[in-house]
Length: 328
Picture 1 (spheres, rainbow, N blue to C red):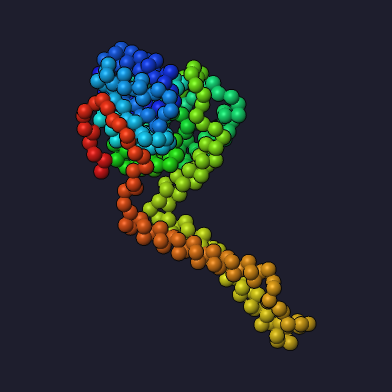
Picture 2: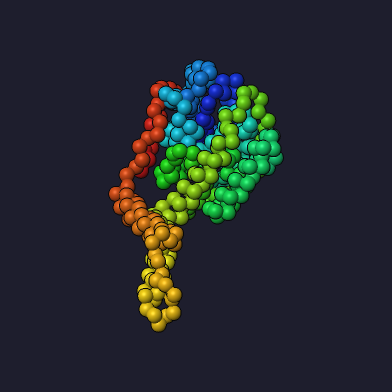
C-alpha cells in the first residue's frame, strides 16, 4: 500500500475536476493506496471552488485551499506542498491532460532510489507554435543547468516531501524544482508519460510564458551556480570591466604623455578631450565599480538572509484536519 499526496493547482477548470477526482480515486482503490488530494483554487472566476467544496463533503481525503486572487502556479504549488502530509507528493494539472494511471509507475521509479521523477510528454497534443519553442526552451535549461530533462514544463511530477524543506517556490520557479533539487544533491530522473488532448476550456499559458521562463532560467542559473557566492560572478564581471576601462585609460594617458616629448616623434600633442575611448573606458570603470559594490551587498544579504515573505493570501481552507509538519 502506497501513501502519497496529490497537489493540484486549479484555475477555471470546473468541468474537469470531478472526472479528475474519479480517475485518481480509481487508481488509489486499485492499489489500496492511502492518499490525500489537495486542490488549490488559484483565484478561479468560474465554479471551480464550488466543485471542490462538494468533493470535500463527499470524501474526507479531499481538501481545498482557496486564494483571494490569482497568484500563479508557483504560489499554488507552494501552498499545496505546505499542506501535504505524505512523504511522497505528486503534482498534476487539473485539465485532464495528465493521466493518473501513470502514478504506480512513478512510485516504482521512486522506490529505486530517486527523489524526483519528472514527466516527459514525448508525444504532445499541442499546436506546433507551442511545441517547438518548448523544445528549444527545454534544451536551454538542460544545457545551462546540467539537469538533462526533456520536458521541464511537464505538470506531472513526483517528489519526496523533504525536498520542500530546502526549496522554496516564488515567481514562476515551479518548472525548475527538479533543477533546484538537483543543486541540493537530490537524485532526479524522468519518465515518459501520456499527454492527453485537452477536453475542456482553453490553455492558460501564452507566448509570454517563454519570456518569463527565460528570465527565470537566468535566476535559477544564478541561484544554483552563485546563490551562496554572488561576488564570484558579479565581482569577476566587475573586475573585468574595471580592468579593461583602466587599461584603456592608461594607454590613452601614455599616448598623451608621449606626444608631449619630442623624442617620440608626435607631430602634435595627443588630445584626450572628446575622444569616445575616454568616455567608454570611464563608463567601464564605473560599471565595474558598481558590479563590485552590488556583489558586496549581495554577500551581506546572504549573510543575514531571512525566509522570503509568503507570496499568496488564503481566503478559505476546508477539508482535512491533519496538521502537516512545519518547514524548517
